[in-house]
Length: 350
Image (cartoon, rainbow, N blue to C red):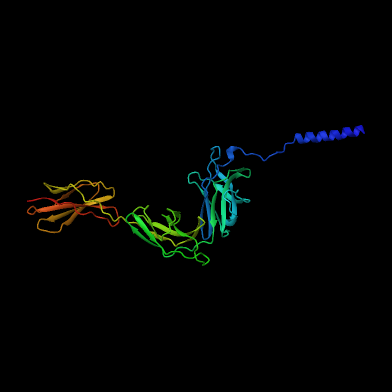
């Protein structure tokens, strides 16, 4: 009997020693900070009648500041809450993530990642966040959270027209009165203007407006801009993006001529008559035009022009038996130049 107790005790002691000396982890392994990416901070979304598009920038450094060369994958988390059950103080019920492929990090170009989904239910509030990984066990912290309410969207604005002016583009369109399912719009509707300089990458400019006209003054004369207008319905203070209009374009034009040159002076020389004037202080002056009028004529004739770097012109074909008067204009850099009014005349009487 005693021997059996000793044997049982030996077996128990051996098992205890084996468990105490095991090398298995009691908790999940913690990756070193040198390989954990910084959390993504610029998760953004764009909602249209097709669904939602999420974009963010690849992280380029670890939480310790070391450079990253590639991201193995992204984890996209989503939560869906019916609007009737939404609680602003309740925890967000994120589900299991969707794994998305990563890739090489472009530190200079700041590579963009994109995720699109059309699996949205009307009358629900959606939440998204994303994590990046350098390996299966090295995940970043959560990104910023974006949220929006999905509802059957409004149709796209129709009849969009543009009008380019001096330093501005005016857009007009027809009001939207129906949702995508042909039902009447029952919520307040607004319109968001989107602009592109290459007809590829469009970005929202300004706030959504309730009017069916908008003036874009953040433009440069002579450049071509491309526009879309998106309908937006406001569901309980949540903006639900709708249809996008067809692309339209416009080119604002400089219609303002430079000021007339000043200080016009005429001096006779051995070779003819030299005309001097003060340099224009306006940056867009491309050149000057010189006009001559005989004393017995009513209309001055263009006799030459010079580039903006010069403020002198010599008239070498001047009959000595007549009196002439000279005036100068300035013109700008537009394809069809805007020309100033003529300066005050100056001349030498014979």
